[in-house]
Structure formats: structure tokens, C-alpha cells
Length: 268
Ligand code: V07
Image 1 (cartoon, rainbow, N blue to C red):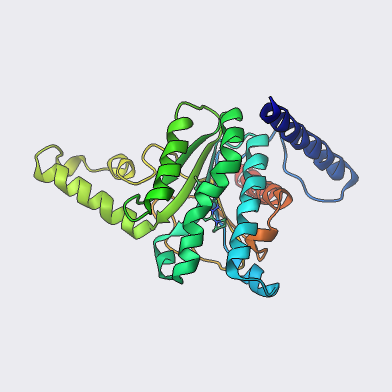
Image 2: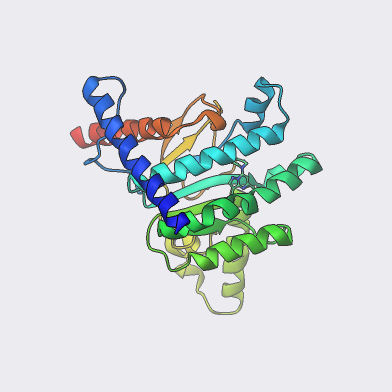
């Protein structure tokens, strides 16, 4: 009862903020995306800059990660509110294990922390949550929370929310090679039958369509081993904004720019 009341308020706030966004556009305050135009069906985000955000404030790095997690909540609501089909968020790379032990331990508790406050709302919103990445090295407590959330939302048909966790693009490709080689060795697959589809199906992303738009925050202009195969045709949007400062207005700006590019291609 109180949960659905709370959700109702959030959904209402989404609608109200969209009304204001439209007002701003009419008043010419900011560029807004076209709600009747193409919304990128799959948006992927490299959420970079949490450490730098904390450093700028003389705070410990973990404070940046927590602020970053709160932004995840806002961006998930905003993406759902405007009808994005798939949102993939890069939360932890295979390289991130090299960070100090305390920081890694803190990061590995964030999924539980997030789910403890958000899972009910995700269920109410009909969101399907999935993890992409290697489950093998994850601590048991993290994996349990993730799998419970995957299971709980597995039949939901709304926004597909993917968290890339312990994800590395080359590791993903190696793992796909190994699986495919084993199929060939066992006589279950003919080498000539290996095409884009076969390879895509053996990646962590399986049947999930490729991203239409990649957003990377914090000023780095590279892919850093994220979705190497899947980003082949993806539009990229880079910003100097640090992830804990990234608001839904920045998301809308990225979508507006994406729509501008789509219109220009359409013109030629
Ligand atoms: C993490 C916060 C966002 C900025 C980037 C790094 C830190 C949300 C999650 C999460 C993951 C799985 C899930 C629910 C939430 C998360 C990690 C780090 C490891 F099912 N944010 N966030 N996981 N950061």
C-alpha cells in the first residue's frame, strides 16, 4: 500500500518533469529531444568519474560510488519514463578487481544496497533486470542478490535493465570462442555455419539487440573493453560531466543529439 503510493508519486514526478521539459523547450531554455521522434531502443552507459568527483570534494572514493549509485536510480526512472527498451549500465569491469581491497568490497555490496531500496519499484514498473558479465568471480552475497532480482523480474516485459558487472569485452569474446570451439569439437556445429548470429548468441548479451547509443561520462574518449562486438554500429556520445553529476537532462541531451544525427543521415 505505502509502496504503491510511493511508486505512484515517482511516476507522477516523471510525468511532471517531462511536462516541464516540454515547457522549457517552448521557452527555448534548452534543447530537448523529440518525443515523437526515434528514441534509441538500447542505450548503454559507461558510468565514469565517480572517483574524480569524490576527489574534487575531498571525499573518499566510496562516497563517489554511492553518489553514482543514486544517479543510477534517477537515470533508470528517466529512461523508463520516456520508453527506452533496453538500458545497459557498466557498473564493474574485469579490470576493477585491481583496485584496493576495501574499494572492491564496497562496490560488491552496492548491488544489494541498490536492490534493497529499488527492487520493489522495478517490479512495479515491469522492469526486467539482468546481469551481463562473468558470474564466476563474484562474491556469493552479490551473486545471490543479483540472481534473486533476475528471477523475480524474469517475466517482466517493460524496460530491460542490464548491469554489466565483472564484464570485459575480450574476456567475453574468449569465452564465446571456447564455447563455439567445444561445439565444433563435439560435432554439434559445422565451422562453415559460424556466422554473426552464432557468435552473438555466445556473448553474455545473447539475444539482446546491440546498443543504438553509447554514453560515456567523465571525458575519456574510448571504449575501454566495453561491448567490443556489440558497439560495431553504435552512435557514441561523450561528455566531460562526471557520472555523479549526470542528470536526466544530460540523458535527454544525448538523445536529442542522437535524433539530430539520425535526421541528418535521413537527409542524404
Ligand atoms: C555501482 C554505482 C554507479 C557508478 C559506477 C560504479 C559504482 C548500481 C549497481 C547495481 C548492480 C547490479 C544490480 C543493481 C545495482 C552497481 C556496482 C557498482 C558494482 F543488480 N550501481 N553500482 N554495482 N556503482
